[in-house]
Picture 1 (cartoon, helix red, strand yellow):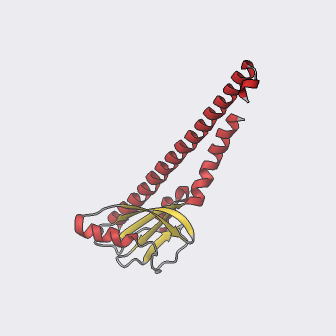
Picture 2 (picture 1 turned 60 degrees about the vertical axis):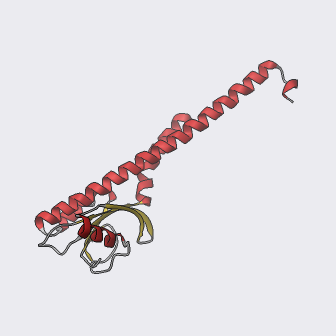
Picture 3 (picture 1 turned 30 degrees about the vertical axis):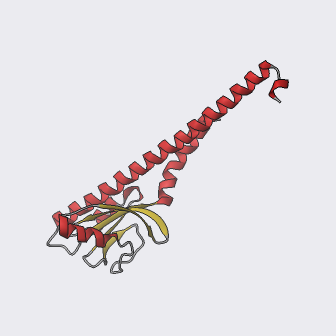
Length: 174
């Protein structure tokens, strides 16, 4: 079939296919870079909030409503748990104080903390029927009942922030 087409049109067809292929590769690369950037930003955000909450509890013994409000910026939920997994205080997670945590990672964090002196853990989990990325940190405060801090972000929240960037990137191709 290509032998019937003149060389000029074969070259045009080659250039069109090459440009489409390059555009597809650039688009795939752009989504990969956005995915990696979002993942790193979520990990840094949740780990910094969990560690910040743990430092507050270790220095003052509890999280005040003002502390919780400042930790809740950027849509991060924070949950303080006791040694049995009961919610001591929380903001943004939609769980009631006194209820048991259903994430389960707090048990592993406490067990490793007793054995090795404290390990932080990250986990993709479900909170309130929403998928979330949570970061869990052990707390070392003798004067407090709080033993574990969980900080996380739901994936609905993650997509809201990145939608504008993806729209702008595609507008550049238009």
